[in-house]
Length: 389
Ligand code: NAD
Image (cartoon, rainbow, N blue to C red):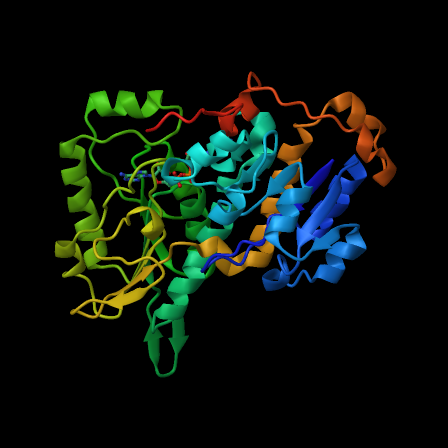
């Protein structure tokens, strides 16, 4: 059974779906692998490294699609390739399911498309397949470095004979996987950090990393809702949004660096920083909007652009930070994919498979009753299975 890797042929994407190490693991399981030439070039995985790992090289995406039973990608397949799919083929990637306009085509072709973003994250057996976490963790780290680069002062406090340098004041809004890593990184660089999230459980995590919790008042009813959502974001009331804006306004008036990470799967990102607050910020302060690609947490942020406001505040619309650390992001993403692919094959066959010769023994074990496969499959047997949010 052959697995293919498509070159992520879009602007602002340098990652690759499978690495030479991942290829070795899959071949050991009994698969064959074909890579579109140049797919790993941007992360220093030349075609020769894939060949040394046992993969074949194909000249085009079309060739990869025509040869492969399972096609792996970073993002959605280019339309020209989706059109070439045939019944029974499997596509696995970060397919951006709620904004994906090709699901009808996947279904019409009879392909099974797995969107890795839909993983049920609280399942412990799914944790090693969690692409949102693996990519957000790296992105949180890199966001702080981006901010440090844009900022014209240092992060740590310095005592020098020419005067004392004050530590940077960093505010993190949204303390999930990326936000926690951003706090840890900013602290390591010597900044003073404050952070907020609508999940009250994040408070303990912020404080354990040495950050100060920015508290937004919450009604008793909201506190109950927050508890009952199993650690995930809930829909805040108008009053909460108003109170949160006041807390953010006060904190940002004194901040040097702001990193916003708040996203809601399948929906527009919440607006957390408004024009009125931006107008009160210090000249030279820097905002990194990690939600710029899904609507933006910061008013006026533009995906993949850095803009400077009239009062000298720089807003970085960081739509795809994982791609800025593409080599490491690809390594972790590829591990996530290998772990998921392993669940798609019949276990009896795989225990016997130790080399290439075993590849013909592999059998697909597609099971929409399985809580991981069932959650990730957005199309299967000619049906679109995704429920719109
Ligand atoms: P995310 O990228 O969807 O959002 C980032 C953060 O923004 C979240 O903490 C969210 O609560 C927050 N947020 C959303 N809307 C907001 C608003 N209006 N105001 C303020 N904050 C807002 O989140 P994520 O990093 O993918 O993680 C989401 C949650 O899932 C976290 O609690 C994380 O710990 C949890 N998680 C659990 C597991 C697991 O149980 N195995 C694995 C991964 C993540």
